[in-house]
Length: 334
Image (cartoon, rainbow, N blue to C red; front, side, top):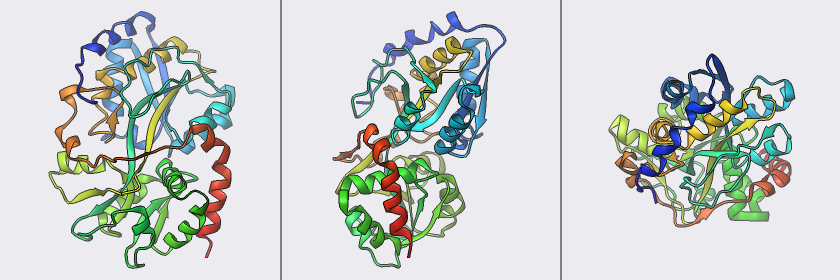
């Protein structure tokens, strides 16, 4: 699935030069893990600016939820030309704001585990939510979500707040996909195992998990790739759960109020080229949205490969999100 030739995408870079204009600035609202020095943002900025004769500027907000909230608050007066960092859990809510415009680009080159045709949202990466564990602290991790829910209180985990964090919302949807109407009681059962609920993924992963505060954290099936490829260690691995894993697709979109729509569309098209996507696997630590062929680091062949893909239609998520959040909040109250 991920090993096709790159020749399919070679031609996509050429039209970028056509519509970009000199001295243009493209403003992209995104989140810290994308724009950070160690993230894909700097490489993407350099590669795009070499093609567009423009300046790419990031406005960094705390999370995908904050990007959506900022867009709502600013409305048609926003400075954003593109928002990058929403996902399949938040995109329908973003669509309903009416603040996004059609991208009008071909999505034929996408290589995702699900079919994707959408006039507003362009995927830029994907992965599965998973609990990453420290093999030195926890040599025998749970093998299912049910086993984790029923684990002894001594097994402490770190999760993220579904109101502020896209991984946190992902776990909410994972629990709902597996347990349906019983999700509330399962959250209550799991609550004794939760050491803390952080505002963002990075708060929990870098400040707590990597300092040994708990042996497991909600993260991604792809997270071990970074440790194996960059840290040169197999210490941190993802636990494969027999119920399956919830799919996340991260997306970008054009803002309706943008005065740089042509340039913004060039950027959205640039997302589906190897020049953008080669920065994803080890800098955003996710699967690329197109087939990178042999450029995909070989450590990705060593990641868990869930047999069962869990996914709730984004429109259903938008409709039920508030009631599911209320269910989670009620379960977390002692």
